[in-house]
Length: 446
Image (cartoon, rainbow, N blue to C red; front, side):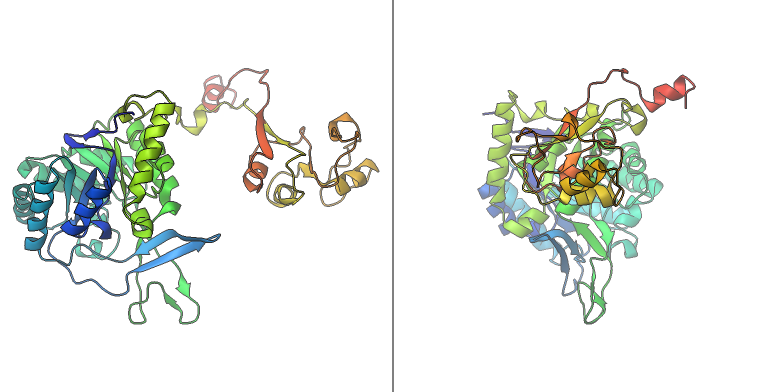
């Protein structure tokens, strides 16, 4: 079995799966149970001057029968005494010396940073994570994302921490910024040993149309919160890869955002993160999901012939390019398997109304054969080999037809099709050679 152990800027753990700072890491008892189920590390729920939290705190988006596709929370940092937290950190590390225990921190002044850093180190923490990403509550007090959105402030506070810290320091970045590279570079300039991202996205999850109060409801009022869960994964993948691909980001990355399966984790690793952190999926399904994460990633690495998880890190990053570097002469077209097609016509509707009008039904083809046009059907289509199938030389009544000359290969039909493998995108032979927009500009053609 492949070696899953990782070393993130000196913080070692038996596997790349950490719990992210949040409700699942609120106490030592929770983290010890998590370690017993197989988690390699945990980032303690953010410590600072304890706050008073509100009730209620969570709201969610359900989609297509799936609960909590996106989760919104307005919970702040720890509301438990610092003494209790530091005592529990000590006990956890004493009992689980091989697991990574990282402490998330958020305070205001330089002196407060100095004191809380030393207390975390004395408790036995393996590393620190600076919470510069919380998008609600704490940012109104001059902390959280208000720091992450100001590169100079981020760099300054990071340098304060590096002045005092004797253990590795991660800077957790907010996605609520125009260019994630700017705060990433500020963290590196401040001396951080690593970067973690993304924190939650500033959001309002929705409005109760009976009460006209946004959710979650706190005594008839609400506020913006932090959005997380599977819905944010594409944003997190982009931001993690943007940092991983930039040569000026010289520190390792811990990936966070919508990770629920081993495939999610493998994608983050392939795009350049050294490990991953999980929160919302644990809140949804519990700690034991790590068993599937470990088994799935182990089997995948074995199937790929990789001896360790580190071999996967960054493998896909080289395949992410600017739009101007993509091949303008590359093309694909859909092929519809008539044996698998159920005649739902979703591809036809999607292409007609939301695509490029190149998929037709048999009825519309008959109209076209007679030189008539209906709802955008091109009357130039003529019956012949191109529009027939193997079934007695006729088009099956339920199977749509693709006008390949008009198709631009957008993928919409294959994405909307409910039958796996029914519509496949097939590469068109490229007779023109590879040419990108940047190459055309260099030649003076655009």
